[in-house]
Image (tube, rainbow, N blue to C red; front, side):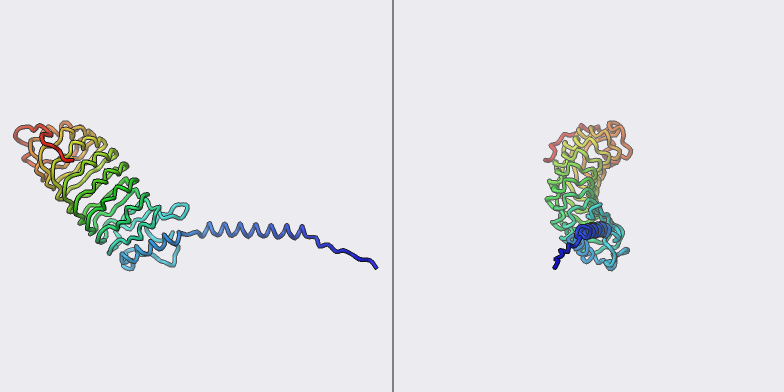
Length: 298
């Protein structure tokens, strides 16, 4: 009687299985890459915005049956993070939800020319990657968040044509990258904070049409990159600081409808690039003023 040991040839089968597994894994990875979408947290934040601003009535609404990448007004990076939202002129009405802050990668937020109202959510100041915050031409009210200075990457802060009231936060001086600060046509009160002199990159400073008062701090002369300085229609008073003449990049200087004293006829000549210059008629005649005769505010 002979016994035969039958050995199955396993290596070829194992090799085939491994190849199949590798191909399957590769297909899964490609599929995941191709059909990747934003995280659940970000999607929930977007839906919260939609619900809080009457999304069904938007001019261009979002189709929740479509991938988030196809929703209008959104910009995604290569990692499927929401980095930009532009819903301007889109008939948003309602308030901004606190969930907005879950969009931690957001760099650009433009909700201008809508009907948004209420106070800005306190969580807004947690969005530290924001570079552009444009909320102008809405009906926002309340105070500008006192800790807005935490948004240290901001380059543009445009809140004009709303109903914000209270003082301009001192912490705004922490926004060292800021190039444009436009707070015009609100109900802001108090003095122009001296901390604004920290904004060395600032090119546009506009607080037109508020209820701001006091003298202009001499430290404003440190904003040597300024091209536009718009202070009209407030309750500023006193003499202009001598340091104003250091702003040689100024192209626009609007000062009318305030309580400034003195004849500043020669001021325009001391600003070589000035194009738009606006003073009250009373400041264009009489004895020439010596700038900066009064103590400036701190």
